Image (cartoon, rainbow, N blue to C red; front, side, top):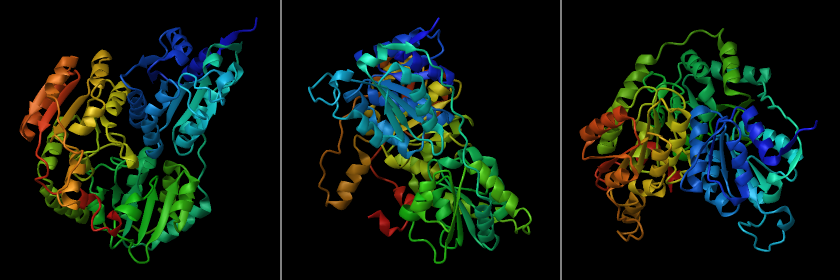
Length: 543
């Protein structure tokens, strides 16, 4: 007897077959059958809701950032999809595998512009502009295949978001069941000739530097081997934090790396857009040669390296290590690098309270805990002043700089790793973007600790207005609630801290209680050095 399966059922079975265990979602009338199919899946998939579509997408983003697996979310079409789009482009920019499952207006109305509920002019075209791959399921017979293809595209090559849309009427329609198993992801193997050319460049390098991004997070051991073989610092900015432990003499922040930039003769980029070199730092040293290891072939055209190795970071770095193995051992520079890092640590003390608060968080956060940054002064200072020990433990939105992403993203991290501590930092302005998700944290028992630095302003904007426009300011000063009291009203714990010592005590207590918490820290605008002088030092490109 032929088994019939609805489109919704086929999507759910495909998700289960691909190992998806959580869907972050806000149900709506166009997606009801999907949630009914999940409800009938015998608990194979958990659904975590939220109070805004943007938040469920950020939660999927956080899940993906923390695990490396695909984070899945579902929203209604039109305004629901658009509300979630900021998180979608954050995932695109940060190379995170995320799958969006959205609805669509009924098939017979698509493209007619009649103003059907949640109609978006050419939603599929909009989806394709924000994702690596997108498709619309037009018949239940396509459901398994297109879901499998979406999940494949999200995680293959350079991971990035994918999306599928299903018309309202198609989602409940049924057809003979078709099983499409997961498509194996087979990254390209490194070209042996390219590896030989890369090794030849490095053989004569006197002051090589390695720069890592999120694409190197699966190659931590190999990157460490290469660093010691070359006696080269490994510099990270955001996504590559923790690939080499910041406590290791070869693990450099962007501020520490800049100290060696002028003397660098060969740069090895591994899974990195090399943003520091073309935007954050001054022009490259004369005669600089560049080796790029990246799974995305487009990066070779964009960055124009001298040698490009298009391959998985782990496999390519391992091949490069093998190729260099016969070279003479280089003099050990660990002591030299430690001295440089210690000098820089003394220099960045002018970050003042921001650095002291970060030190308090680092001291309280367990070694396997996650730190989720935000678009705020403390978040920017964390690029240079928060030690990271393992890949994926520093969660960032990457180059999109999406204000307000932090707290809902942290909830997704916690959903992925409920047994590990998660601390989110934010300014008062950014935290208010997602403050309603305190209800989500309490409802689903996601004990993230949110540290909110409150200066009653969009601080970066206000400081820029004062500095650049003779003190004329508009729209940057804020009137805020009592954040600790708001947390308690939601059923979370609320704390207040006036200095780093009180923050450390509050963090210790909140971690021990293991419940959702907000720690409000009242701060003054300005008063210490800007972290930007370390993130973008002396660059004419800052203007």
